[in-house]
Length: 118
Length: 109
Image (cartoon, rainbow over all chains, first blue to last red; front, side, top):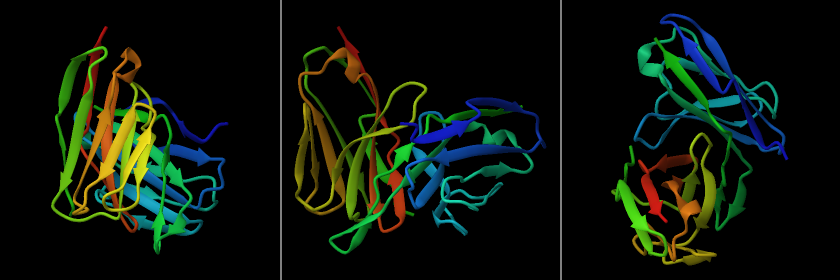
């Protein structure tokens, strides 16, 4: 039961470097999400996707890009890493099911990627 | 955007004690969710609430969806050491989900 798998678990970047955080899920979920979690804070949504080929900005999208070429994969790209992007990044997926007229999505999270930009 | 205020920020309790934490919002949500995060792991769903006034239990955990749709609470009864972790509330309105800052729970044996 793999669920949501994130790689790498840890990474240190220099300012201005780029990298891609990988996320894959094997639950055939249509929705996928990227969050960042800063120390002592809750999760903030960076980007989300409602299906292959469709992505939307969340609350804090600046400095990030995403793509969704398949149902399973939702990579997050940092083009020019900045110290403000030091955080723990969580990927999540969900399968929305209509209930009472609204889509209720229960999100399942990966174990996170801890990123430091120095 | 919608902000969630979660309290308390942290709790230090003795094993066996009951715990209560809550979340409030300035805006309404259609769903309230409670997650637990263990160190080095992602959040795991504990309870989901779908209707205003709903009271739901999951073992020693009980949560309620406030009647105004702007708040929710989580109670843990008879705490045990493995209850240690960070508890997050989350409110959902359509495709928008917001998280509280978390309640860090420490349980002393």
